[in-house]
Length: 598
Ligand SMILES: [Zn+2]
Image 1 (cartoon, helix red, strand yellow):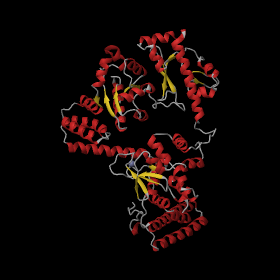
Image 2 (cartoon, rainbow, N blue to C red):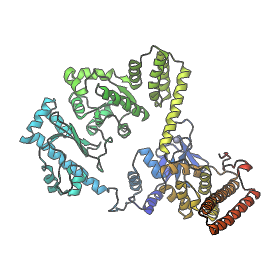
Image 3 (cartoon, rainbow, N blue to C red):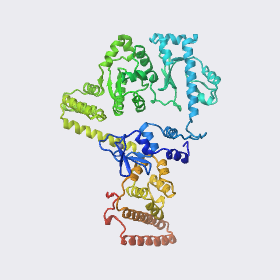
Image 4 (cartoon, protein in one colour):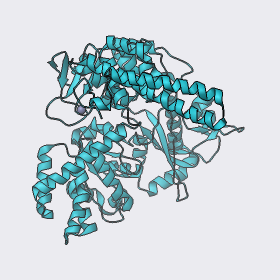
């Protein structure tokens, strides 16, 4: 962890969760809480609550909750460090630097951006001006790429040498650690560092503001590997960036649409043909992070991927992600074997524009694809087609759009609307269950232990009573035991919620926001007796086991001692039963909410 608890707390103290959330969602007062439609799941009546006293949020629909930091992380898709930094910046708090932390600080990032910028300029200069760049210039020329595009996209050439870039970076004052950290140099044990990229056309991958995050380096012929890329660094994450986004942004805003293609050369070819709203996904399929970056510019998307099996799969996967992220997504299928670059060279920009204008909605594309695959003669075939399309339908958030598709698909597959909707509902609930499972990895929590913690979180007086009778070790679930220990040690609720994992945040924020309810005392007493009983039963089992062992060994002294202990314990248990402690015989105990426990 980069910052200590006090620092995190001071950032939280300086930001009000209600004020922050209300800048993003229209909050309405509701009792001691504020409520709104949940931003994390689809709903028609608000179950998303924000509580000013506890400084937490919780959605009772999708059970997501936590403190303001978690809200920023989820709502803005930021990692922890960035969420805290954002909140600190907002409140004008200067975060302390901790030199030895695992997380890089701002200055280190800046140095990596600088290393990349210097390298990009160096590579570009060689390509544009040097005699040594001639072969690369010829290659790009043969691929139809003009020097103007090389300038705009900052394309370059890395010399066929092991130590060409290293001295350049050093001269610019970059340390070896920074040069290696940027991924530009490679250092293997006992050897001098050397250039990662050699004899390659260099494509800088930039962010929206034009900073160079990393590079893709392509060979000049067909030798393998065709591409060498910047490895994961503190500023470059695979699947997080989009090639050409800085150049395309104004065009995307103007066209209110983005064309997604697979590779660098596709992006450049389209740009040269006068189609500017194009970015490259640089991977097998679009990722959720990439979709979120695009969403800042537009929510209309046309997929223009290679017309091969890999491209088809990429369309399927990307389409699913785009629908899930609320995009309107269309697919422009090219002729078999073509990619946008080759298509442009053969048929020209007008024909390509025609293709994109004739693009199919992703749902129609998937439907057509499934019909081709399975046919639609028999009932079985039609069911297979239905199974292929329903997962996509389940991701459509706009009810009107969904209704239109259901009508169309029902007609085409000759399936009743009611049956279609039933199938859709079952897939949706399966998705939600899956999502929930993914979000809640850990083992099942013990119901009674959960209840104990539930009461403690809601009621500090009860927590004190629990502390007098129970030790954290009495809880079998390690997660809950740890939290109980924290509460016993007197941490504030704020600190508690910051320090637990997401699954526990979801759980505890929900408990803390429930309205006061009757019968907490009774529930607590029940719970404590149950723990006492379980403890006793465990001791009895333990003693019994030792008793058998002593008997086997023929240890008479020990056997006698254990027998007496066992008798004591049995007596205690009888007494407990008489005083009416809850046992299975006394009927099920209830939680404070009145829900029967298993
Ligand atoms: Zn929700």
